[in-house]
Amino acid sequence: MKYDYLIVGAGFFGSVLSERIANDLGSKVLVIDKRPHIGGNCYSKLDEETGIEVHRYGTHIFHTSSRKVWNYITRFTAFNGYHHQVLTTYRNKVYQMPINLETINSFYNANLKPHEAQEFLKKEIEKNHVRAPQNLEEKAIASVGRSLYEAFIKGYTIKQWDKDPRELPTNIITRLPVRYNYRKDYFVDSRWQGIPLEGYAMVFKNMLKSTNIHIELNCDYFEHRNEFNVTKKVIYTGPIDRYFDYVYGKLEWRTAKFQKEIVELEDYQGTSVMNYADFAVKYTRIHEPKHLHPERKFTKQKTIIFYETSGSDSNDPYYPVNTESNYNLFKKYKALAQQEKGVIIGGRLGDYAYYDMDKTILAALKCYERQLVDSTS
Image 1 (spheres, helix red, strand yellow):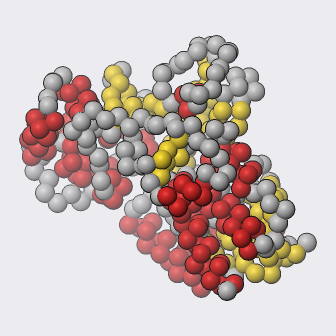
Image 2 (cartoon, one colour):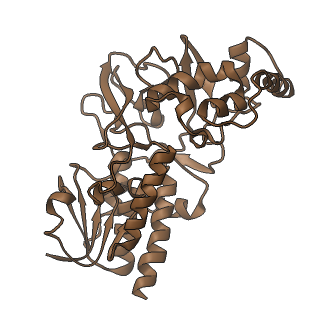
Image 3 (cartoon, helix red, strand yellow):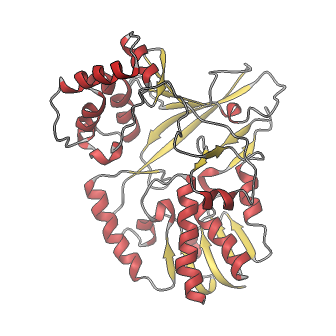
């Protein structure tokens, strides 16, 4: 069958473009994904045994301050108003993250007022004399001091990236937030946030329900790329280096693995996500998804937890490793992409970037307006 557009990947970037092309332009779209479901890494579904909505690829909290994004996404779902906080365990004690007044007072066994905490941390930072940070470790020490860095950042960073923090660039933590108050809302700058009331799978189902959209799952683009009959454009949202058959070499990615466990308790940890800062604890986080839906009533005395560990797997890419060598390699692939005729490469994998969901949606809307609407007018 002949289609106007082929969208490779059914995550937010591809789904937004599919929805706009089908409903706004009235064009025929074929959406393919190598996974057995739509939604990309945002996919969620109900667990049959417990009735808990499970985020298959880690906890996803939607948040944005963009009215444009909020007006768009709320056409397809309502949100429950969940506000996220991040907690971390270090030496069997739980602390607030990002580092705030409670973290500082708990860690140093103090009772500092905001202005006192600022002065105290300033003295901690000055002990190390880091004036021009050259790597992640130096940047962190220059931001919070050595003690807080070694407790909450060093071990977690090594587990997450499998690199000594001195080998990582400063831009991984360009702005390390420190709050001199007790505010615990993680996305403090986001006006709107929450979890889709009916789960993420329903969001994508609603976005892609147009009769102009045909979906093929378990379909690998590279196994069938010469079989598609497309008259206008291919929109590719997979890894950019894979598209060009790794002609310059492979970009470095980190992945995440999740080990599921059903626990015979009503509540295992009291929060949706608990970080583990100690290097000796091999997992980086434990997720307990039932806390994402406080509006739902769970009758079974069971909960689900997921142990998250970090690894290296270019076949299951999550996080780009933003070293200078990877950045330079990406620029070479980007230059190739700009020469491709009839192809748009974008999204977090195509841009070799870590995007929040709202940034992905905004990028897709801008791509549609600038590269598709303009080209058809």
